[in-house]
Image 1 (spheres, rainbow, N blue to C red):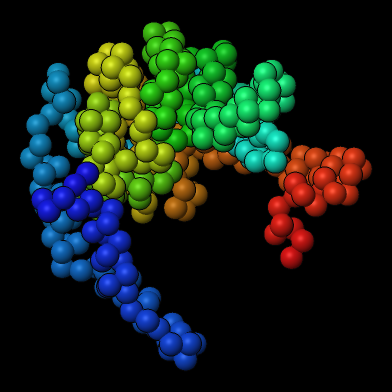
Image 2 (image 1 turned 180 degrees about the vertical axis):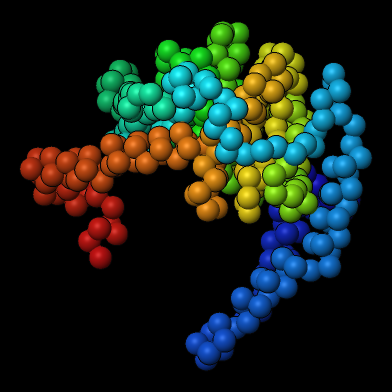
Length: 362
């Protein structure tokens, strides 16, 4: 994106970054931390920030309702478990994943492995592991040039987060439970630039399952963050559709996570207008959500009922807190990385020192 004088926003912002910086002496840093803490608080509580919050609150209260007359801003009772009997019956599962082997960039190829888990109030962890390496892909090379080209293609064509999110949705589709909590956004933007991702979400939204994605951190989205400061405890607000978000994804700071790679029209036209994005505040912290409009009322009722109100600053649904603990306990990436390092050392000391991260030897 360009400014009126043809300068890019990136170059303009970087100029502000370097020219607006203040040099701090070591003595200042040792005694008062250079006033950094005071400056941060002044920025957060500035008159401009308070005015933006006031205007956001006014906009929220005056904005038109959703189609059908459903309110965008509403008061909700969080943590009322009895209001969602589906939870106690074990009909609701939470899905989360973690890298069991973070994407490894070796001198001749890449590898990654993700662990996915789900849990309900009636059953323990159900898991699935998914692994890929470039071994077979590279072994099909026609010659050395093709071998190098394939390595470079893999280097720039792999999103480990998209890989993880794809198999989280696939795991959810395989579950018996009809109601699903996903950790993070319901739709991962990187995936809807690919036909495989669009097909996956088409399967999810055309089936019988009802799903909601719960975002633990919304600070990367300026619009969400602004409305979050205006939201009061016990309230929920529907900000926009996913179509609104994707169409504005080229606006600086509007995008959350990896930048959209160009949403396929089949998703943008058929599904994105029907995905609602919003925020909710059980107590002191605001979280985000994404849900299909047809499942809005049902999934909001179930999600708010399961919110863990005794978990200060993390009052998301109890099941999401539990599955997060379980997947990280069961898929500790350090164990597998140590095993690979041992096999390298056994194979060749030279291979071990060549492939291992140099930070391990400091």
